[in-house]
Image 1: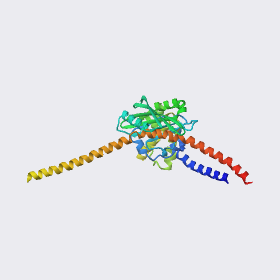
Image 2: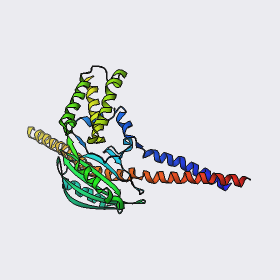
Image 3: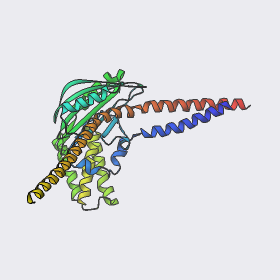
Image 4: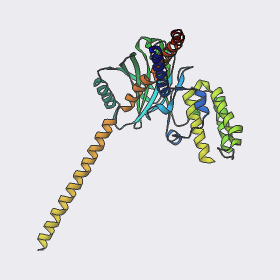
Length: 259
Length: 82
């Protein structure tokens, strides 16, 4: 009788955990890229694009569960309870980088579980930023996070790379590459290094734009849009998943405006 | 008489304009305070996301543990019945 009760409790716990698990579900990267991206397209397209290249093989976190300020998050593999992750957040600001850092420092200092320190200047392709570090105590261990903060035209770009404190050094090289790859551009196609690939990309986009079929039509989706998506996903892997997502959103937005 | 009317009008005008200015100033202060209060939330959200999205490993581990326990308990229920 007791065993049956325990079993029932465990089964109920499984259902409850299933619900919790769902809130942090990791999506398959391709599914995200291939699904029609309607929401926030205009917001993403108007203005500059900020992106980074995530480490290879890392999974995309469920974007619908993220804070509106966090634009993207990738999760890697680890042996501990806290998996390594990288995310990019942005925020409109009207203060200087120094003031912003002071606010962040005070915010962390007010939390007894948070330890903050300034690691110094960090040069990015769009200006000088600041590299900072946080150590956050959680019940699964200490999460160490390196946070790169860069200000540009009234907007703060915050790239956070975190892992379990004991595992942080093993991910350091990956994190360093991620920080180096942080880019701000108003034209994603210009970031492709190979001239041949850049030309190919421009031609592909040009062909889509000259096609007068409605974007939502099956014919356009099957014969033009899906092959284009596959091309971007398979032939531009060196640009990273986030660049691919942003490019597809941008082109989709432009096509919806044209058609 | 004319002087009195002008003086009264000036007083009314001054009092109204000063209260309007005061209200505008208060609104500006409120706006600035709110902006300052929100500043830094991007860094906070980034840090929070780094922890919250990473906890999936813990959730999976616990779910596996519970599933294993369920499987182990099933045969023991059978033996108790007999």
